[in-house]
Amino acid sequence: MMKKCKRKPLLIAFLHFSTVLLLLYGCNSNATHESDFMSPNIARGGYTQQGDMAIAAPPFNEEGIFPCSDCHAEEVTNPQRRKLVDMHEDISEMFDHDSENRWCLDCHNADDRDYLRLASGKLLSFKESQKLCGQCHGDKYRDWKVGVHGKRTGDWNGKKQYLLCVHCHNPHSPHFKPIKPMPPPVRQKDIY
Amino acid sequence: MQKKQKNSSRRDFLKKIPVVAAGTVAMASCSPEEWDDFLQQSFRTLSKEEKDAIIKNLEKKYTEKYGKPFTVSAEPATEGILFGYALDLSRCVGCRRCVYACVDENNQSRDPQVHWIQVLQMDKIKGIDLAHADVHYNPETVPEEGHFYMPVACQQCRNPQCTTVCPTKATYQDEDGIVVVDYDWCIGCRYCMAACPYGARHFNWGEPSIPEEDVNPATHYLGNRPRPKGVVEKCTFCIQRVRKGKYPACVEICPTGSRKFGNLLDPNSEIRYILENKRVLVFKEELNTQPKFYYFFGV
Image (cartoon, rainbow over all chains, first blue to last red; front, side, top):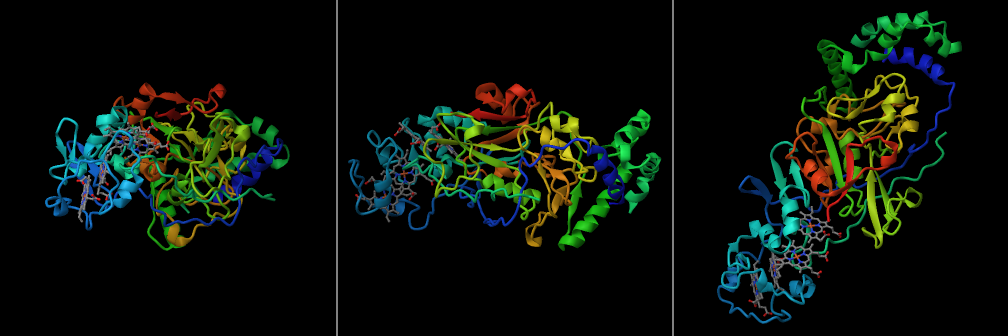
């Protein structure tokens, strides 16, 4: 600190001949914010390794809903497009994903409901739902794999973790949902 | 008090100057060698031993002040790495999570408030137009119809004006491209703030204050270590994280995945993919500052 005391007065005087343009973004007081904020999309359920990618576990809450076969092993599949009333009313209600042309069973496997299903007939676990999305959104899927669409965390030059598409897009209503912004910066007051 | 001894030569030098009055004249009368010596014994020219001593001192000081163990890293740049950043203007929703993640990670003063990131809200029809940009927008939810969002922090120029005008060379571009500030050398003249066309440099007008429990004790000498009053600070790409291989805090927090970071010299990095495959722009290109911070359209 000593050195600063010595050199500051000198240099400040030295520099005094020109008045500096300043106050571009001088700042001030009374900021508060939710410092305990957690990103709503950070995975809490751990990761699964798929090839060389560590991918966050599916975000949906399994309680009372997974395995789907708990009910669907008994339940007779009704392939009819309809308003669901006995179960999944919420999903039926929000369904807004090319819903003119699509129905649940374009993505969910009819015979074993614990799996998703590609058009090719290939079954996918919920842990790899990105491949289902990739079937129709190939461009986004490509960008996602290289870390340009979606999000990777971890080491920029090493191990990375991927979020699934469904961490950010509800598959039944995929438009990215509006969120509450954090507080704006305090307004600039006169500083002197 | 290591430092005190270190600087004796500089102090001798100071004595030679016929005090303040005509500083300019006095300086001009010095030999270039003396001038250089005066200016350049900054952190980057210190020996390993000298650095270690300074670091140990700081760690002790901060540990006492904030009541928790502090680390102050002096991790240097690595050869073959040039850091670059890209932000997807077609995804950012202006939620400001990055602003506060940055404050927390980088120990910005809470009061007076310092924010290294400003998020500009602009009209889609007007495009990037600073005359109509708003940083104080505060609706219930974002994004707002008809608007897009452009977060702005240090653009990490290849051709930075701020370092050129710094009279003490306290701020400089390190080998991995990060423009840093040595707070012990910053004299608070704020020339750099005037020179920066992005408003990305921030001055500690008051004694910075951070609640003890919120202080981040994992710091870097040239980055997020607590600053004294009267110095200039700015985004360092989270130097304390990225030199250890981690993504910057803003990248990690962003709920839209708009923020991308990596090594511009690595052809397999996401940053290179963006430069090669997306529509990319730099802010105020006409000024020839040559930012390493890119804006792109991911659509």
